[in-house]
Length: 132
Image (cartoon, rainbow, N blue to C red; front, side, top):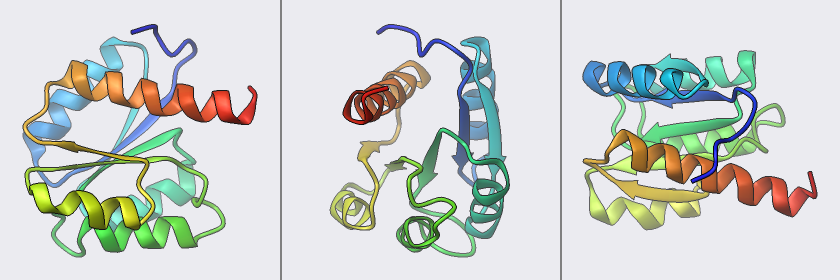
């Protein structure tokens, strides 16, 4: 997979500390900036304040589920265009997350390299469609 080029900002919303540490280390080692959110409210606040290039959103968060977070992100004019990649260990959450506006869904456990490949595909496809 080709590198994304300039640094991208990736918001990882997951309440699992180990997932956050691994994602941060891996994505940063590939030249990207990583923002971390441990619950839905924090994800919404960080997304509004920092305009990440993409959000990696876990389905299970302590204060609201990923479906609710995705709906709120897509309803907010400041975050509605931000692509969301849903991640979950719950197979039957694929459809609800896609219906909530996520660009794609990947099943946990997932290797960091596979996750970064999916992020790159989503962003490359978005840029191709926008003609940039």
